[in-house]
Length: 448
Image (cartoon, rainbow, N blue to C red; front, side, top):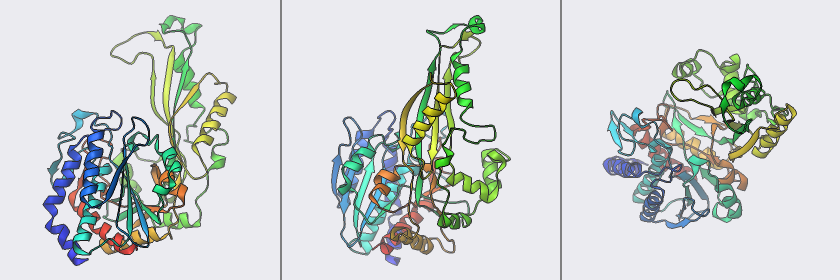
């Protein structure tokens, strides 16, 4: 791989310029800003790489999928990425404009640079370097790049289930990955699922004078009481029957967990706290983090929240509630249990609207695609051994893309612990970026 590495070094400036071009193009899924132009930029890049490219319509008015195929070989590698990004708010907290990629102290700052545009360009550049120095690709590649990931991929599952032939592969390289504080490459073998709902209640025909609080219901209180039944003060989820469906980690999961470095004091310092919820610590905290579901209030709205005082009795209240789901805890099952729980506790007036969902999914660490990534990580980051997570604590469409079709997956990539993904000043370290390109080349060499 010496000539491969030399090619990367010789094209450093060109590669950074291409990354900046991607990051300079807005592509905010939530608002639609720049989405069509971004899809076209990705299509053009894939075409220049020599791929056969299609823009696939996933649903009317939805961002198109860039679907590309290239190479040939006994094995097929499916690569999943997304070209959409999160909104940039709050804009005033950015030190440089989010769509004006800016290099400072070896880091490149821009919205989407870590999630997920840098992963796309690093893989494009690795393939370009491979072809220039190693010849034909050692496997066939199917590249599936969507534009709705940051809004929960609402149209993805039915499309994937209706078109399994587009995704048939021996292994899947996922969209993301990182190095930790010690410079160790982190690999992910799955992701938690998600159920995101809005709970709402209307207790009055309209807001009323607060003096009526003696005899008229308050929607904010009504919703607060309902929410308080979902979780205890010690952070135990109280929804009847939910925890009974949680699949415990198996022996392989536990073996991987025990090998994961967990610098909990450093992590708590970063979060500005001095203990974990439930007062768990060490290995128990890590196990909880990866293999327990969540029930989180993401936002509450009711009544008057402006400057100064306004004494009213709110007629309506609503809350956004998210559940991160582990194996055996499927979105519809949780939605049904939530409805039954609220009804049982006298809150049948609380309405539930499902906003998005994802199924949980994880892969066998012995799968060939995983072993190829482990070998590549060892070759690229010596003397570090890769840190292998059985699942991400976060969520992505792992199930419809890979797991539903029996395809094992692994994620590795360009990010790092200080990337500020989804936040102001999102960034990557360019040194990590080029290491990830080198690892991609070694991954291709191992997966054949």
